[in-house]
Structures are given as C-alpha cells and as structure tokens.
View 1 (cartoon, helix red, strand yellow):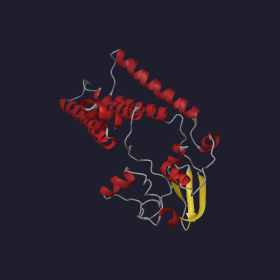
View 2 (cartoon, one colour):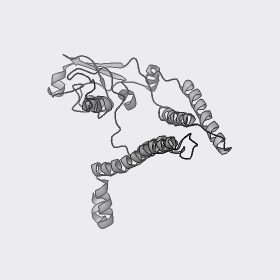
View 3 (tube, rainbow, N blue to C red):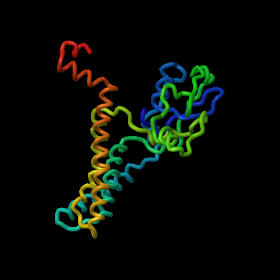
View 4 (cartoon, helix red, strand yellow):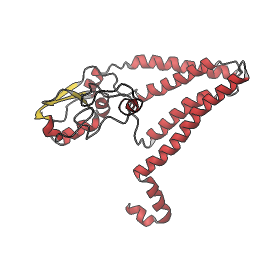
Length: 257
C-alpha cells in the first residue's frame, strides 16, 4: 500500500482545502493521528486501479533479453558492434532492470482513492507554511528535479502555495540501504560501463576515438565518485561511522549504542 500511495493512489481533501495527493508518510501520519481511518484497500483493488500489464512487460523483457543476448553473441564471435548498437544496449539494459524493479508494483494509477475529512486543513496542520501541499511538514515529496533542480536553474516550476495534482516522479532516493543501495549503485555503474565497453572500437579518426573514450570515462568516473562520497555522507547521517569507530575501539560501548 505504501508504494501505491507514493505513485498517487490516494487523494486527500479536508474542509477549506482542495484535493491533493498523499504519499505514504503523509497517509501514515493522518491515520496515526486519527484524522482519517485506515483505508481498507486490498491487493485486488490496487491492481485494478493500476495500468500495468504484466503480460506486456513480460513480452518487452523477452525482446530486451533477446537484444542483449544477440549483442553478446556477436561479440563472442568477434563480429563488429557499432556505437549506436552499444547505446541501444545501454538503454535496453536499463529497461530490463526497471521492469524487474516494477514487476510487483502498481503503476500509472489514473483513478486514485479519495479520502476526506470534515476537519479544516488548518486544524490538522496548525497553519504551517507549505510549498506543494499543506502536509509538507511531514514530507514534501523531495528533494527532486522539479522541486529543487529546476528552481536552481531558473526553469519553470510549480507556483508557490498551489496544490500539486500529482506526486512528482523525479524524486531523488534518500538514504537507500541494504539491497536497495547496492542494486542502485550497480545499476548506475552498469549504465555508464556499457559505453566504456566500446573503448577499443574502431573509429574513422583518432579524434573520434578520443572523444568516445573521454565521454564514456567521465560519466563512469563521476558515478563511481558520487557513490563513494554519497555512501560516506549516508554513513554520517545514519551514524554508521560512529558504529564502526566504537566497534574498533570500544566494543563494550558499541553493544549499548
């Protein structure tokens, strides 16, 4: 249900306020604080509202898999692969990983479940200032490209104090952990590494070869550096460096930390 909420599955409307979508954290807060009842939504209803077709995704995954196997087979026979084919490989590899990640999740919800209350929105939020929805103090659907990057680049953004009508789908992952962290890191490195695979391809001129090598090395290097720095920052946010320090220097305090 949490993922269903995060893709826009629930819309909330309070007195003296227009409707706006709820993400999982906002929905949980409203239920815990008795502003609304826990929505009685079963798996069947969630999938009924989803536009995802598993059979279509299966066919797409088969086509993507065939493209990958075909390219690997050609490389194994020492046959030429063009840079265009390599770029296509990059895209289809990402498509395959995306299809796997979304296999058991609802997608493209067009008819959300409406949750309403007669309580005024100001009584619920304490008239706190907000940017996208009155429940921003719980979670503001960010950071992301729409909310953070576009204003920085002076690009058009959602007008302030105007209710959003859908949850932004460009939110940056914050503090992924465990399998999520490793899978996301692997996916990004794989995306950039596919271009590096063309390092020794034949190019018409030396200049083109140098340009290809530089343009493929920079994303891979930046991605690797980003994950090293982001992991270090994440460990600071989660206190993992302190855990490690105590584990090395004082295991007695570590067990009580």
